Length: 295
Image (cartoon, rainbow, N blue to C red):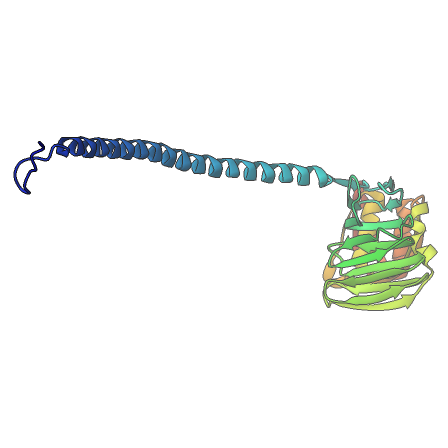
């Protein structure tokens, strides 16, 4: 006969089993917690490490891209070439596009070893004649002082000396647009010359025989109503000499003169003496000019 236990009196025959199950569940729970903790800890570390490596990799890729772009830009940027015609000599240059430039004595020009979308040249100082090869897709631009000239294909003469206020551009063929960063002065056609005053920042356009202006390419010098400073500069560059004179007494003189590079210096000085009533003394490479007080 089975004896029935009253409530509250001693353990039930199944209590031991239940306690064992609870203990096992507790152990399993603890084991699962430790396993999760370990896995999470490792995963968290992996995530942080992966993030760090991702950031580092991104920085490396970014730096590499910038470096590659810089190298590519440097490679694409053509090196500049400077050419100077020595005093007493003329020089002819063929540009990368096949255009031709004549440099007057003592003049300097800069241009890239290869052209990009545009063909840009800088007349640093002096006088140059440009015979530009036509290219409707690539404008040809000459920078000189504060001015620039733009063409597609034409021929023109530019005279720009840093120490002389008078700057001139003369067209022999085609059309040339002239201006500065603030305005366009207009489009010049053959036998038109624009004269720009660097001191006053003013300009005017006149008609002239452009072929005679550019005749210096063939050693012929034609100067029209130029300042005495410019006349002296032309003598110094053509004959590789130094001219001494009293600026206050002579600077106001203007000159129109024709001579050839083949003429001797004394011959040219005699012409100047006749025009302006000046005395001169020639000592080696030094020339001394003085106003004739008796004239």
